[in-house]
Length: 166
Image (cartoon, rainbow, N blue to C red):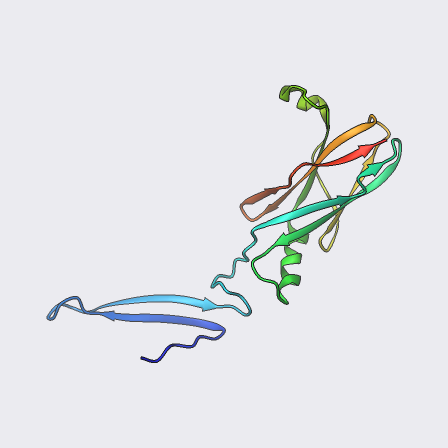
């Protein structure tokens, strides 16, 4: 039996099935499509998640700086499609949250420590977001920073990272 070789394009796989002699034949038809340079057969891009990092992690109190947020899509295959996957980070809404770290405080106090609550990062360029942070009203100390990105029906939330206001 010759093995079918598929290239980029749309295909229809038709099977004729005869259960027992004398019964009517049935046809099973499956349609599928092969896309360029992908190991899956769907137009929906596969993204395992997003990795977030930011800089600077130490800011002088009373200063006004941009937090520079780097977004790296975690995708199944490295190829020329990386540019395509990086564009996913551009079009997806990015939000930032910042809370003051207080050690072993009660979880109910979180609302009192929340400095930035899911604010949209509007200044974006490629896989980078810029959040304008005004520290004039912030106390010195360690703050937890985390990011949220909505992609399709999935919400990706980063691990908490820390920034120091000194």
